[in-house]
Image 1 (cartoon, rainbow, N blue to C red):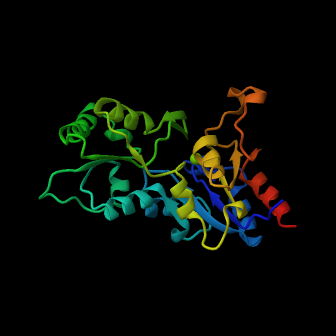
Image 2: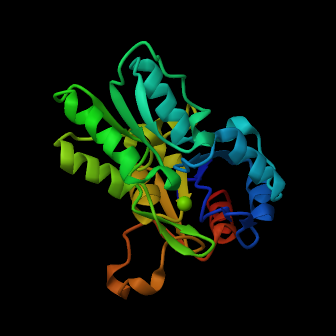
Image 3: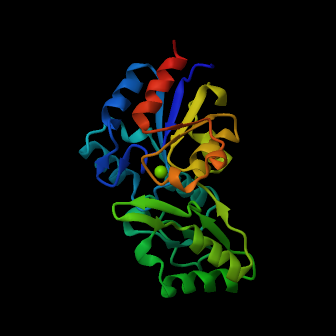
Length: 260
Ligand SMILES: [Mg+2]
């Protein structure tokens, strides 16, 4: 097996669920670093700014640098800046901190949607709809990601994807998706000088984490500590990922074997 030199690691559902690390994850991350594997945390979490995410991970025991976190918010903010957009944001107040300020002298020319449960009301969505509709097709609909659902303390909860799809449906526009499973997101998160075959993506979403990364040649390892529900799949209909593991710790064990 080709040695794994870099690991892109999903956060929610993989390293932690809300304020709890998954079983053995704090120790397993230390071990992964000791093995000399380069680490990057790649997340579609759009509710929290990178600095809040970093503070939360440190508080629950993980050792990391803030610069090791590559979030779809970071990528989307760069997208807004490089395209010089003046978006109407459907984001939490915290996520909003990662984005440039609005230019109040000019009209909105785009809508940016992230996971913002308190903003997914008729009022906000209708405002977004009007901006897109009234632009006669010139405004852009930017989806930080199109996640269907995610794991929360009290079970499985709705992601931003259906709100993005709803706006597409009513306006006839196609969204531009920034985060996982976009190939460009994975490529831009990869350390310089490595080939995709030397990298692995570890996550709890078969499609957005594993298959997305596998599409550019990485390995995609799926963990069972988050949204993936093994019992919902027939044995022969399991996702075609590179491996399915009980938890992050079991993945690190597997990576160590590729290095021997
Ligand atoms: Mg996840």
